[in-house]
Length: 202
Image 1 (cartoon, rainbow, N blue to C red):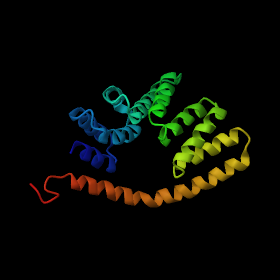
Image 2 (image 1 turned 180 degrees about the vertical axis):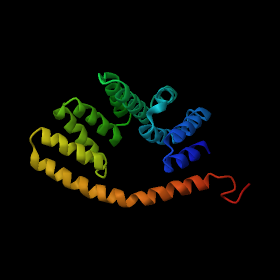
Image 3 (image 1 turned 30 degrees about the horizontal axis):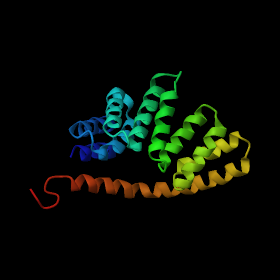
Image 4 (image 1 turned 120 degrees about the vertical axis):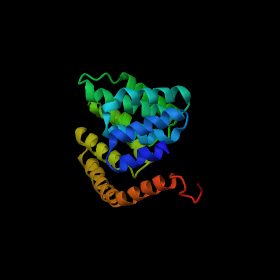
């Protein structure tokens, strides 16, 4: 119910309330992985509760030390918080956590994407490109992969490859926009299904 409430707040654009509800869900059952993806997404839109969110993700890695996604979410929460607060960002811990995530779950495309983004932000474009390519291989439908890979290719002077990636990005972006309504409907259905009595039972 707490996860459902958090999703409802998120779908209404009430991101602070969404984070609060998802934090509550994490405290009710810290080992339950279902709420953490939504907490990460809500936190991206509402960084005001950074310390609380980081602590929940840190705890999640301790409870599930072989879960690659746990380290991925922890890395993202630290990165988001530090970018908001510190212009002199020390990325060593974030890089370590992302690499740990990949070591535990090599086929997680989002972890490869974010590690590539981390390298790209440091202007390490030659190091970022293999990670973007691996993310693209694992999930060619991730629009951000194509966009950021295109930017890296521009920086390394490979303009033809960059144009190809920009073209794919534009196609995926159009498809993504058309899917938004479907996703909102699925969230509303999830929230409804979690209400007492929604299945005909008291």
